Amino acid sequence: MSGAKSNPCPIKGCTAHAKPNQLMCWPHWRRVPKPLNRAVFETYADARGRELGGEARIDAIRRYQEARDSAIAAVEAKEAEERS
Ligand SMILES: [Zn+2]
Image (cartoon, rainbow, N blue to C red):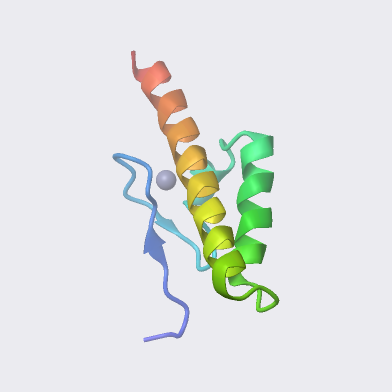
């Protein structure tokens, strides 16, 4: 076992794995619209940072989860459009 754990790509139907500290597999991550890509990075830094505590930290984590969900939804919407 290595210390780095990979996690399954969250995009529906994708069997690839995301690299450690990455939200989804590289081909899917490349499809995330720029503003959402940036939002994920920024909120992730806040959620993981040690500067924030208590309520602010909880809020940062919530914003990260929202950004992440939006990014996933955006990629899934693109894929659904292509399949139709
Ligand atoms: Zn994927």
